[in-house]
Every structure is written in structure tokens, then in C-alpha cells.
Image (cartoon, rainbow over all chains, first blue to last red; front, side, top):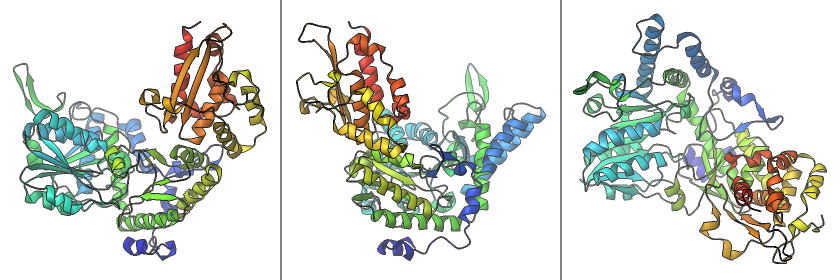
Length: 425
Length: 157
């Protein structure tokens, strides 16, 4: 639907949100959306790529954990310990269901995608890679999917090669194919770009990587709330996701990996819970997932994440995807009408993330004016400096939508930009 | 606004049309709503003394800013043999930040070290209803400017 919308700039020509998708009912579940800012201005929250808000059921799940259950998991024999452990392991099974993972033991709780990627870099890449080996990344990676691999390269002598990005913000797949040879041992790619909204053809890219025997890693931070994820269909070896970008609490994430591969990996963080037995002569490690969950885990976070994923799975994901694609097409068409606006990232089928610059004002000034109008956007490099350099800019303004955003809020963004232009131009 | 305030006189003799902080406060009192205040702040920024091209170098750049800010702060010997006085110059590529810089220069430029130490910039900015712009999370360079003035004047004089 978005391709037809893109070729026709008239927003009314988009197919639109499905008639049975009730965005007002969805919004009613998010208490924060009903607050005001700056003495009574309604909030228009368009910074969802940074973090999404939480439905009441997620807030309740976290509160309920501390109100009724709080106890350390896998330790106490007492009633609360049993309940906390049961809830924590049930959360793991929910994550497995959400990702269609064949075995919940392959779902490791982490603090977020950054932590998940560091785990793969330290526990798989560093012991495996050798001088002359290659890691393929893309130009649109978040710093969290660059720096851990650079650190692994420093320690192993492997090197990073980078897939170029085309002018519309999509990946250069021919360039990607040209990079793939037997030297490539790992390909790590972002599913949905946080800065541009580009949805990458990861299934195809994973298949191409497999042809040269490379291990594949998917950064699903932005993707998990946008598109249904199935690790078996994708065929990847590792996938990282983060709770707070999927309507869950902060400080929690997941690394999914094949259980056998995980069982062959050495842990990189030692501590409680990750061991089988400890003596000063030596320690044997527990099986996954415990092997990679040293220390007391973020129990409330895992339970909140599971509630968020249950909430997401109970929604009509197809309707949410159609609604978000409608927002992407509508927003792109509306922003095209703003004088002097240069969009960065216009790939077909993108998620509703709008990065742009205007030639009449500085991003900081515009951000200030929008803020006073109640509109929350992000300005900056979005932790994607190589991507910003690719487009010859230091920073962009970014408006990013979630399922609860509306066309009216994108109208408010455009009106806010017009107001800023009057003040600044 | 007259440009008569002695504190805003450029040491090199260039015309500086920055109003005094008292005039700025009086101006703010007449304004209604954030849009008028922003417009006034932006107008103040347009009246900043020129920042020397030669000083737009990496060493004078404030890092970690959402906008690009260049900053020079010196204590300059007075020609009449009196106490050294602050000469602060700064510029940003963002209009609102330039206006905030102008307010800071009205406050501090031309002051002695002892006078500068006695000024509570937070208090003034709060009275103007612009306190959120001094928050470190804004990363607009204002904090760096105030910190550098404090550092330079704390042990001087």
C-alpha cells in the first residue's frame, strides 16, 4: 500500500487505517497520553523511536510484582520465591511465543539490545573470530551495533566491512552481495532503522549470509513493535530486542539464540546463578539461559516485558501494521508540503519515522518551538553518526510514531513546523 | 531599547546594541505568552556582538551541544588602569541559543571578577521564565558559558 501512496502525494489517496482499527480505544489504555505539558497544552508524543509509552496493564504488572510477589528468583524455597520464579520463567515462555522461538531456553534476559549485542560480541565473536575474518555491518546501524564489534575486532584482528545505503535510505543489496565471501564470519544488521524508518529485507539478507556460512545477528529494537517477528522464518542465529521500545518497561531486553549454539559459548560475565558448581580450583557453568544471566535479574522488567508482549499479541498486529504504514505515507506526504523541508529516508514500505531538515531554521530552535506547542520530537544524530555522515548532515529532526499515534497528531506536527517557520524564517 | 549600557560596550569599540539586563527584564514583563518571548529572545540574538571569524576554531567549540557554539572568555586589562573586566563572546548557529547568549552577555560582559561572582544567572533566567534552557539536558552551551565565567573569575581579582 505504501508504494502506491508514495507515488501519489495526495494523503487522501492512501489506503488508510483499517476501518476496524480503533485508535481511540488503544489510546485510552495509555494514561500518559492524556496528560498535558507547559500549563495545559495537550501532549503530542512523536519520540517513539526513543521510547514508547506503556499501557496500563504493563504498569499494573510491574506494580503488582512489587506489591505482591517480590522475591529473588531461583533461590528461595518460600512461597514468594516460588511465585517470583514461576512468573519469571513464564515471562521467558511468553518471549519465546512472541518470537516463535523453538525453545524458551534460547531466550536470555538482558538489559536491552545493547547488552544483547555485547553478549554476542564477547561470548561468541571474540572466541571465534581470527585475524583476516570479516564482520559485515550496514551504514545505518545504531552505535550499539557498531562499537561492540569494533571492540571484538580490536581483540581478534578481524575487520568490519560496511553495506552502503542508497539515497532513499534503503540498503544497497548489490553492494551487500559484493561484500559476501568466505572471509565473512558474521553479519549483524538492523531490522528497522531508528533514524530513517527503513525496514530492511532481513530475511533475504540472512539467507545470503548463510550461503557463505556467516552467523547472522538481527537488531530488532525498532522492529519488534512494528512487524511480527518469527526467528524461525527469519533464519537468523541471534536476535536482540528491547522491552521499552515494545511498550514494556526500561532496563530489560532479550537475546534470542539457538540453544545448542548458546550451550557451546563461554559466558562473559561471572557471578551468581550462572554456575553449576564453584570451587577455587574451578567452576562449571550452568546451561543456557542461566549461563548468561549472572546476578539477580531484572525480575519486574521481565514480567513487565511479558505483559507488554501479551498485550501486543492480543492486538490485531496486521491492523497495527496497516495503521503504522498509513501514518508513514500520510506523514511523508504532509511533510512534503512544508516549505524548504528535506526528508532523509524515503524508502518504500518504511515505518512511521520521519527524519528531516529544513533550510529556514535550526533543529534546536524548531525543537524548542515544537516543545512549547506540546509536540515531542528528537533532534540530534540518533546514535547513528556514520549514517548522518552518509547524508552529509550532522543531525536531523526526527518524529517517530507508535501504534497510538494519529493522522491528527501528524497534522499538529506540520502546523507546529509552520508556526516555527513564521517565527524563525 | 537603547544600547547605552556600559557593560555591553565592545572593548574593540564596535557598536554593541545589547540592552542591559534591567531593560531585558522590563521587556519581558510586557510580553504575553511563549511565542512573544521566543520572538524577543531571537531578536536579542540578532544583536549579539560579532564573533571574530578567526576565533571559530576547534579549541573554542563547546562539545556535546545540540547546536554549534563557539565561546571565548577573557579578563581584559582596563585602559584606565582599573580592574580587569570580563570580555565574553559567544555565538551559536541556533537563533534561540544566540538570544540566550545575548542575555548572558548582558549579565556578565564588562563586569569585574568580583561583580561576576556576585551574579546569580539562574535566578535571572528563572525570573525571565527561561530556566529550562539552563538545564544541562538542553546541551545548548549555556552551561559551558556560565561554568567558564565562574572558573575564570573565581580566583581572579
